[in-house]
Image (cartoon, rainbow, N blue to C red; front, side, top):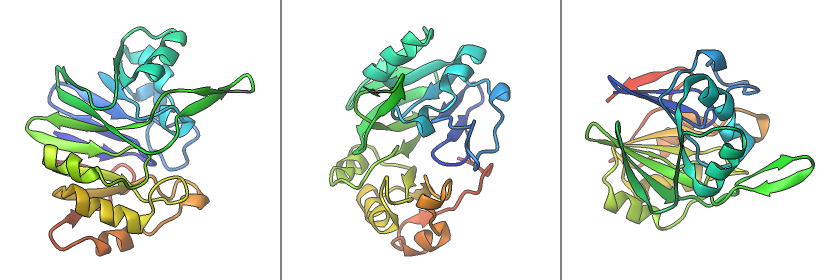
Amino acid sequence: MKISFHGQSCIKIVTDTYTILVDPFISGNPACDLVVSEQKPDFIAVTHGHDDHVGDTVQIAKNSGAAIICNAELATFFGLQGLENIQAMHIGGKRQFDFGTVKLTQAFHGSSTVQNGQIINLGLPNGFIFTIEGHSIYHAGDTGIFSDMKLIGELTPLDIAFLPIGDNFTMGPSDAKLAADFLKAKLVIPMHYNTFPLIEQDAHAFINTLSTNIDGKVMEIGDEIEV
């Protein structure tokens, strides 16, 4: 299994058979190396309704036929955009897919979009725990720190945790360091930073603050790791 990072909170998980694309913010993302028309995932997982996470989900799903995994309110919204292959879930729920299991975790943030000058609420934001080929990958989504991260790590021993560090809209580096201690993932990878000036951070400095029993890795845009 290979995991690659594509700016903001967009990651791609590729197994021998399936491709899962998470938060495909590609168009309008100055920090993304992907081309929308070239994306043919089998599944798209969306953490919440903000534009920098929904991104190009609708176009990619229409082009590829990918199944969308998201919360129930966001699923209804995607259905109104003409999509049909949508797997609605909610926080605390776990579901078996062909590639492995997905569990939705809480995230403390917002989830909305604006259409015709009106704000549309799109349910609660969430994180994902993907368990694939015996490995557990936590994508926190956009969130502040919360104490139940300790339970997340206890209930599912994590191999990898993608954590936002940008501050202002999410955790900053100091809170993300504490979140890493709570989660006890073997490897922590920062995300949701440096896309825009307001969330500029030194990811290498963040990695250097992690506790000695936790490995950290800065993934540059397009970098890939194999697990």
